[in-house]
Structures are given as C-alpha cells and as structure tokens.
Image (cartoon, rainbow, N blue to C red; front, side, top):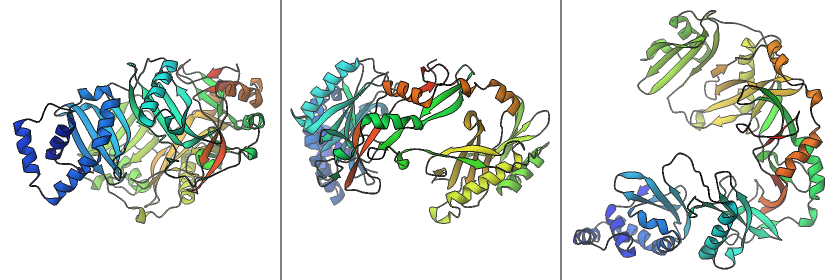
Amino acid sequence: MKKIPQSMIVLLAASLAVTAPLSASAASVLAAATQESSVAKADTKVMDKIKKGLEKANRLLPYLKDYPIMEVELSEKSQLIIVNKYQSEGNKIPKVTLSFDQETGELLGFLQVKGTKGFDSTYPPEKAKEVAIAFMKEWYGEGLGGYQVNEIANEGKTSVTFHKTVNGIPFRNDAVILRVNSEGHVDAKATDGHRKSVVLSKQPNIEFGDPKEALPKEQVEKMFASYMNPVYARDVNGQVKLLYRPKLGEIDARTGAFRESDASQSQIVKFQSKGQQPTAKTKEEAAAFLAAKTGYDMTKERAVFQEISEGKEINYLWQTDSGIIGSLYVDKQTKKITRYQVLDSKQKSESEKKLSPEQALQVAVTELSEYLPANITEMMRFGAEHYAQYDHDRQQYHFQFSLIHGGIPVEDSMVMVDVDAVTGKAVLLDWRVPDFGTLNASLPDPKKAISQEEAAKIYLQKHPLKLYYSMDEDSEKTASLVYVTTGENEVDALTGELYRYGQE
C-alpha cells in the first residue's frame, strides 16, 4: 500500500475547502510540493482524479466535517484509492474510510468507524428504509440506478440491501448495502462481501437463466425438509437440546439441489480406535512425546518452560519472545495426555506443500485412532472446502470431528486435528470426548421429535425462500436462478419452537 506524501494531502484539503483556509505555512509546503519528483507529480494526478468524488462525499455525508485530517493510500491489490479521514492528528479512531476507483476516481463506498465495541443501531427499520432510499436517490438519481430494496436487517444491525433486478428478479452479485446508525445517518456503503461483486451496468453481457425453468417455490419448500439436519447441541445453560439445523446457501432453482460450493461439507468417517493412554510425568517426557509426534524438539529450542495448573489439568508450556511454540496437557491425577499443539513460526511456501486434502484427512484419522476409546468407530467430520479448512499462512489443514448418536452428530463432543501439509505430521491433536454412557443418558429422545417436514414449515415461515439470480462459480458470464434462505434460527425438535443460541 503506497501512501501519498503529506504535501499532497495539504493540496487536496485546500482545494476542497474541507479544512481551514490555506494558511501561509501550508502554501509554502504546497510550493515546495510543486518542485518534488515525478512521483509527486503522479500523486497530484491521483488527488485531482478523486476531487469530484470527495466533493460528492462531503455533500452526502454531513459528519465528514468532523474529520478534517486526511490520509491517502493507493492499494495495488484492490486497485482502489483509499482515503482515511480522522478527527485529529495521531488518533486513528474515530475515522471515515472512503474508497475510489483508481481508473476513474469514482467514489465506490465508505465506512465510519467510531471505535465503540461492535455496531449497535437503535434506528427503526422502516425509517431506515426511508433514509436509505433517499440516500440512493442522492447517489444514483431518481431511478436509484436500477436498484430496488430487497432486504432490511435489524436486531441492532440496521441495514438496507438494494439489488439490481433482471426480469423482475434480484441479482445477488450486484448489491448495495447501506448501514444506518442510531442518528439516522448512512455510515457505511458496501457491496456484499460474501459473493463476487458484479456491476451489471459495467458488465452487460452476462447471460441470465430463463425464469420459466425455475421450479415453483412450493415444490422447493417441500424439498427443503431434507435439508433440516438434526443435531444435539448444548445451550448456554448446559442443557442438551435436539435441534433441526437448516442447511443454508443457494439452491439450484431448476433442480432443488444445493450448490455445494456455497455450503459446508460433512461426512461420516470410520476409525480403528485403539484407546491408547500415553502419559507424561515430567517436562522431559512431555518434550519427548511432542518430538516423536510432531518432529519439533523443544529441548533444542531456546524456549522458556512453564508448568501451569489449569483446573484438573497441567499445561506443559514452551514459549519464546515471539510467543508460545509448544503446549501439552496432562491430567493431574493420572498424568494421561489429553491434547497437544506445536506452533511453527517459520514461513512456508505453497510450493513446499506435499499433502493433498485426502492425504491429510488420512493422517488425521490415523492419529486420532491411536487415542480414541475403542467403542468409537465412526464420527462426523465437519468443514468447508470439501475435506478441511486450509490455513495458507501456516500450510496446515484443520479438521473437526464429533461423536454420533443414532446417526445424529453430538456438537458438544468436538475433537480437532491440525495436519502440517509440508511435514505430514499432526501438529495439533485434541482427543477429549465425554463418556458415552453419561452422554447418552443426557441426550433427548429423537423418537419424540417432530418431523423434518414440520420443522421446515416452521423455519420457512420465519425465513422464507427467495428467488435470485446468482453468478456461477465457474463462469464470469453466466448467472443462474437460485432459491435462498438465510437466518440464524434453528428449530427445537421436541417443542417445534424457533431457537437461537444465546436467546433462551
């Protein structure tokens, strides 16, 4: 990210009259700026390019007058010009960030950050809609640029989403989201970061699916029942509930099947559990175990060792100035090892990667099989990207598994494995699982549950399916029809009530 020299900031601030009138000292800085290198002259062109966009921002955002200090950056990665405005020198928060197109200087979006924890708006949703529409008219003209209101979100996050429409159907990839704060000001304008952004007016050659090919919504609603997945989950009070959790994402409107690239994957994985119970009574034994399992020898590292008591466990911990590099937990009474992790600070490149996702999964299963109780022969694997989440910075695969009871995953019994894609070693292994007998006694009886069909009807009353166009993942020119439902609710399988974690 390249920052524009302060002299150029003074030039722009003076020309737009967003700060005090140009002083003598500022004028001298400006005079000196005209003698700078060709780089500075190029920066002058940048400032001229965004002049109209900043004038527009000052007109539409009255609170900008409270942010007189300006810093300008060029983002080579996003091809944007970023303007950060602050209330005073040396204080980076509160601020307003404005983004401009590097080619045209067009103002694309903005975000006000006040520095308070999170974002909470008390502005009424219907009034927020009026504010947002008025803002869009100011931004795009009376026709709103072809956008229409499609979604209004509240619950402390008051925002209004506008979509371009094609054949009367909203286009998910061409969206404008306006956030309205408690004062009734629009303090953010953005696109939908979950999907690749498309500006239809600039990319008019996209082929859109024929609306006649879409299945009737009523038919897809019936099919949606098969996507209500049962799961045992513990609430904030520690009570285990049996819930129907909807699968979310985009449903192909022609077939009623989920577009799998938009949904996380899961699968039943078989284990040949051996129930081994290794122990470590000293730091030397702990270090030897870590070296054997991960390839990292803590005794050869210049690390400070600590033995920390944490409840019923002892944490053998090694750390350097850069942070923790190794950790191993043992039970205080039995000295049985329950989990471990090593953290390698060395940078690894993608070219060093040796394991495929399938191979890494096999490593995870083999390592877990050593220590899982012998009566655990299968678990449910959760994760995105088909087999696992992948950390490109560390070159590691992350896997999560949970126990299964009667074919239903038990969320509270999650075990985890991280596999180094370069060394092929499990660098994190946590095989703690609850006692099966005690666990089974606490689980609700699935025979008393309502049907998937009933659960789907309850859920869709609150979060109905909506028909959209959405860009195909493997094409830059094709948009297909999809049904979408979004929401943070689940359905209590015993009571039929909508449930949301934390709102009991």
